[in-house]
Image 1 (cartoon, rainbow, N blue to C red):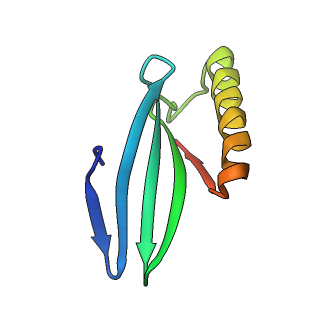
Image 2 (spheres, rainbow, N blue to C red; image 1 turned 180 degrees about the vertical axis):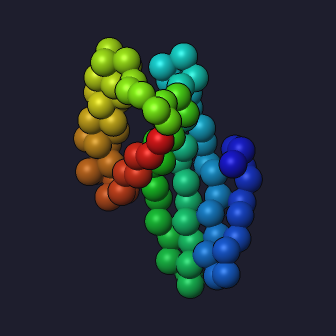
Length: 87
């Protein structure tokens, strides 16, 4: 999904509010607005694009990823936003 793009699944709309890139573009952090039945949810979505299918991630990169997620965790507590991390 690209910035300002909106997708709709049944009665659920997902809009990309912002995208940031980290770790040499291996990590995309998207702020999403999810709407269903007049309810809105702000979600911080972490997408690590360089996860190996048959191996492991470099230790330093994995530690950097965890540190970034932890920083956002502090922000999400104040915003009541869930964090989603996947590879």
